[in-house]
Length: 435
Image 1: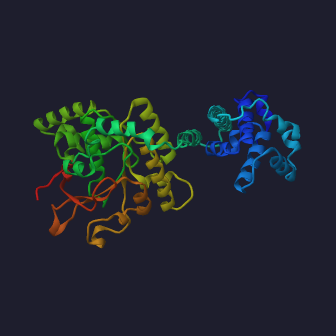
Image 2 (image 1 turned 120 degrees about the vertical axis):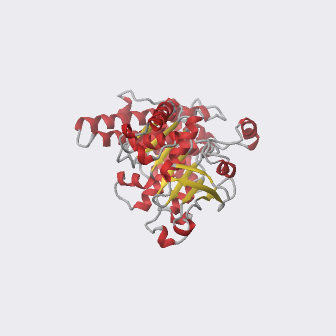
Image 3 (image 1 turned 90 degrees about the vertical axis):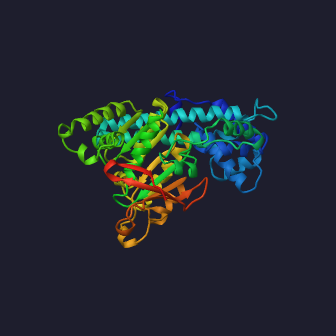
């Protein structure tokens, strides 16, 4: 239990605001629900106030009144009267409190002080770990980022209910101010079905090996960057040089196999196209992070920072299953559940996310048909958290050149509808296919 020595160290507290909240509840029991919806016991700095608020909670949940008599009786039953300063202190809590106080101001003060204390505790913990240097520096940094992110998420998530009358003006104006489409998926027919990649969207792209998942992600990045939108590309699977080659291939129209070798071996015309592509791509507002062993918490900390600092508008992650390798314990499905929930929350709070996903180990030869949502590795949790799930299907044999992008989930429209495309693998490019 936290002790009161923090007051001697000058940590942020507001004893008067805490007293006003408790005193207000004693005068008007109905105010407890307002306080309890926004505060927990740990928001109070004084041990006495934490004990009192906790006993108020017990009384309220058991249907008993929260007045001076019942509260004193409950504290006495638990032998906590002396710990809170005695009955005189309890009685003093209503001194100076208005007959019908408004707690909103006091609650905001108490929560703000608690947030600052939490930040100080996180910083002190990080300092202690850094001084001990028992773990790798990157692990210490990730834990500190995770703790700060948890503090931030706790603050963001505590939003009050808003009436429809209050919500209508903003929602109505936003509807007419927004573009008809969000960011582009780079496939016009797909944009029509999904309205593009919209704010708050978590879009999952799945498919068999070699079906163009990463190529499609790079194409989405390229086409949005071409339109001036800032894109962050987190490539856990491959180094940035390979991602760059894919973008050069996409822009130049040169076969990827040619760009894997020595550019000096290119024909003069191809070399000129290649140099033009390099210059063009260098101007695109795309930033790449190719860190290996990236945990979901570290990814969110980096992406969140990029959104706030660089005004990032789209995040691409390649890919979900590799991220599980940086997570301790648990089985892979439980890890994917955690990752997908984190990505969904990030998309809701900051900017849309396109994340690539592997399928289960069953091959397309074993399946004998295009993949469906349940073929995604961890599909149940991806289904629950994603706004859009897109499956790439590049068949072999008799059905060659009948490639499709399948909308397995589309929260804002129809599903199951295949989009006819051709995946031109040598060019790392998806193009519409004539039916």
